[in-house]
Image 1 (cartoon, rainbow, N blue to C red):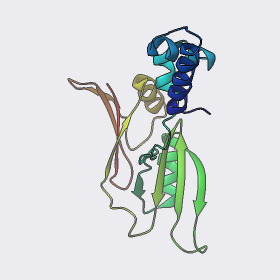
Image 2 (cartoon, rainbow, N blue to C red):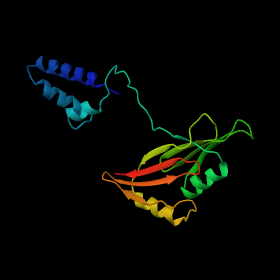
Image 3 (cartoon, rainbow, N blue to C red):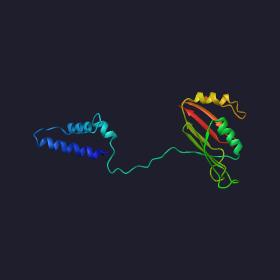
Image 4 (cartoon, rainbow, N blue to C red):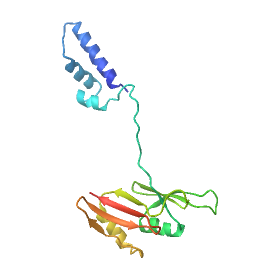
Length: 176
């Protein structure tokens, strides 16, 4: 793919070539012509979409995946899979009688649950921005979970639906 610097050089060469034939064009016209030759609507669009040459890639992050502490596999599965509707992505134990490390997800939200002592502290809170919070509330209340029937709380900045897992962790679903 052509970089923005290469496109600028193309415009400069076009302008020089046309001047050699007594056809003067402005630098802006040469840039617009090159942008259209490269398939862009105009130079501004090309400049926004073309990569920078020799640009040092910046540090980027993907989504964070919170790790929550759990103490009882059966209770964790009842809460996260049955009640909240997550699916298991993976399960890991170093040996059959050692602690479980469980990856779960639902509609783009990924969580890791760990029985390992050093991975997380019980009583954590995670903040989950979302859309259609009323649908989640209705789904959860419809399950008639014996340990909680969460409802939406209106704040000045948006809506919150909090759930507490059996290990003291809180998930704060929020819609602004």
